[in-house]
Figure 1: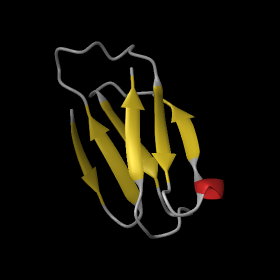
Figure 2: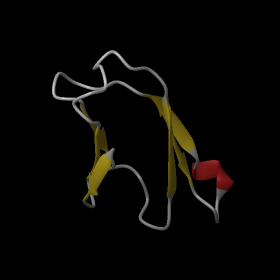
Figure 3: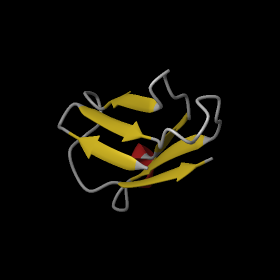
Figure 4: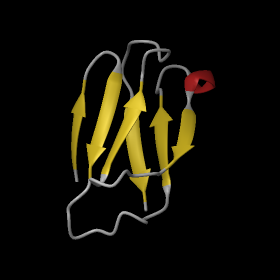
Length: 68
């Protein structure tokens, strides 16, 4: 798995060998403020990518965990 990030988007790229019907969850953890933690279901598109909108996510240090 690879990832790219900008101030407004986080994108996961899964290997081609992995089926696009994978399921799971992505968790965003903010070490200094637990009230900002959030999670979303893992939903990849036809090119095995999952773009995530970060435009409403406050800047700062985040830990991202992907479960599938």
